[in-house]
Structures are given as structure tokens and as C-alpha cells.
Length: 391
Image (cartoon, rainbow, N blue to C red; front, side, top):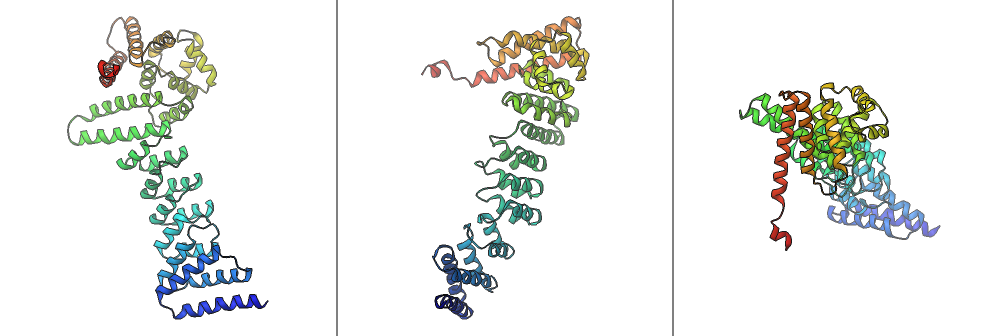
């Protein structure tokens, strides 16, 4: 008992000294006290006295004292929760430091802070060593632009698709945010497509504003470029990404006959299959079997019609699927020559069915062929010269 009373007396004398000591010395003493609380082996009463002393130091008029407590306690899981909470509710710069470092907060507390805090505190939370999906979701939903930028810039942190999607919806029209999102390896296909569309809208608006081309021409160029980019995104994504991509395209009015025919002509049949599943609610396995049997069977035609696709283009889809089936087992094929062969087969079939008359679909197919020829030329230009390849 005597030893415990002596410990309490030491703490009391410390507080008496703090009342008259200069601010700098008080800050040094506060830092030493906090370190002793965390790492010294003392009896329970002394430990409680140290905690009480730190609680009283929160009212010290000198900011240096609270900075000292923040520095000593900010990264420790053993820091007193009420002291940490008080530091968060004090000076903004101290609050930012504590929120960025302290592990004592639970997700629910951080989510509440995100909902009510200003941008600087949100940015501090976004920069924490570890940000959970729940906290990231709160930042994506209500965080200011800069806090979301800090979150997305953390390339080593895996962010849920819903977080990336919401940030893209809110801030994807801003070039630097769009660039950060596009750098992320785990970016979902539908979010990638959204960003590409936003970029296309921005570029189309710019060229119309400058008077380079007419609004109608800009819309068509933007649509064609966006469709080509969408098919390219689908080609680099796994089948598991197709349902979300198709649903995004449907909700945004981009799931058109033209983009689906372009995907099949490019050999990206998975996108077409996912679209049929989405539009008809037919089981995925059944749709895949029907598509792989080709377009010249009644069951496929029934699913095609149920999807609401135009009867006038059924022959083009059937020809593309039949050409794709013939090329599927050819290991010598390359992507560009295969696509050209599919498009040529579709154009021949379409020419026969229309007696060679130029229709809107024939014009679309010609654009597909021209696009593919340009892509093939660019791909060929990237190849090293024969001598370099041999070396």
C-alpha cells in the first residue's frame, strides 16, 4: 500500500511541476510520460495514474503538449482510446495525424468520421496503412474528390469493385482521377468502359466546341471509338467480368446491335453470350451451347428473337458465328486475320441476302472491316524488323 501511495504521489508531483514548467519542457515531459505508459512495467495504480495525467494534459493550453501525446501514442494499439478520441476532436493538424496512424479505431468509427468530417480528415483516413472495404466504401460514397484521389493512388491496396465503380461515377470525368483509375490492375471491365466513354464524351465535346467537326459527326465518331474500345476491353477480361459489363452497357443504353455484331465479328463471343443471357434470362450454359452450335438452328433463332435483336441482322450474326466456329480450332490464326475473315464472310452473306444493295448494316460492316485493317497495320508496325527479331 505504501508503494502504491508513493506512485500516486509521484504522478501528483508531476502534474504540479507541469503547471509552472515552460511549454517546451512540458511537451518533452508529456512525450516521456506517454512512452512510459506504453512501454514501462509499473503497477496497476501507477499505470492508471499515468493515464489520468495524460487525460488532464489534453487541456494544456500549449499545442506542443498535445502534439507530443499524438506523436508518442498515435501509432500504438495500446493507447488509451479516450485520449485518442479527444485528440481527434481537437486541433485539425493533430486530428489528421491521429486518424492517419492510430490503429485503435474500429471501422464503424471511421465510417462515422468520414460521413461528418471535412476533406482534410477524410484524406487522412484514406492514407491509413490499411483501409477496409467498409471505410473505402464510405469514402467512395461521400468523400471529397481529394480523399478519393488519395485512396485510388494507393496502387498496392486492393479496392473492391464497388468502390472503384462509385469513384468512377462521381469523379471519372476529371482527367487525373481517370488516369489513376485506369492504372489499377483490378479495375473491373464495366468501370474501364465507363471511363473510356467519359473520355470519349470529353473529346467529342472539345472538337465540337472548337468547330472541327459537326455535332452529328462527333457523335458517330465517339460511338464508333467507344464501341471498339469496349470490344477491346472485353477481349482482355475474363468471362466472369462479362455479366457486369453487359449490365452496365444495358443500363447506359450502349448494348446495341452494332456493338454485339462488332464483338462477334472480332471473335469476342463471350460478350455476345452474356448479352443473350442478360436480355432473355436464359441459363448461361444453354446460351453457350446454342451459340457454339452456330446461328443456323431454330433454338438459337428463338433466343435471338427473345433478346429483342432485329430479324434483319440475324443472317449477319449467323454468318459471323459460323465463321468463328470454323476458325476456332486453327492454332495458326492471329486475331486480326481471323477477324477479317469473319467480317468478309458476313459481308458476303449479307450481300447475297440483299442482292448487293447498300444498306445501313452493309455500311456498318464496311466500317468494321476498315477499322480492323487499320488495327492490323498498327499491329504489324509494332513488330520488330526481321534482323532484330533474329538477334
